[in-house]
Structures are given as C-alpha cells and as structure tokens.
Length: 86
Image 1: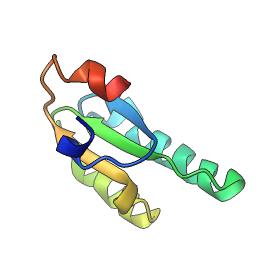
Image 2 (image 1 turned 135 degrees about the vertical axis):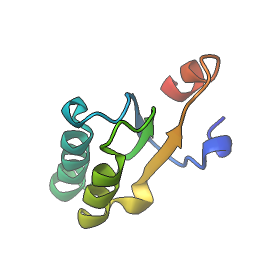
Image 3 (image 1 turned 60 degrees about the vertical axis):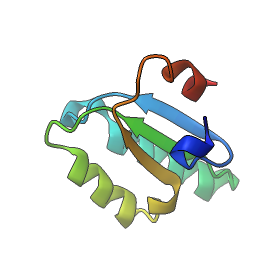
C-alpha cells in the first residue's frame, strides 16, 4: 500500500479535510522541530478534501523545506485507511 501512495520510511497519517482549523500547519511545524532538534525525519500523509486551505498547507510545507516529505493523497477509500495507519 505504501508504494501506491509513494511513501517511504516512517510517516504520520492525518486523515482530515483541509479546513483552516484542522492544524495541518501545526503538524508540519512539529515535524520540522523533530528534525531540527533530534535529527528525526518523519513524513506526513494528508488525505481529505480541500475546503479552502490546501494551497496554504502546500505553501507552508514548501517554506519549511518539507515538500519532499509531505504527500497529499486526496480521498482515500475506507478499506485503505487501516493500511495507512499501520
């Protein structure tokens, strides 16, 4: 399943629609802090529909230098979700 979404290594899966109050940006900043403080590089996988905030999340990922570590996978079927959580 990882290959289907181009995932490598460890990642955090965040299945939440792109609303401003859903804290995607907060998660990106914490992932950057993990890398800067501890040398731990973890990717993020975001699924869900865009309700006006996806472009902003993409911009922040770019600004933080995390674009290569973030996947925007759109809608994920229910039967695939458990595999992404593993």
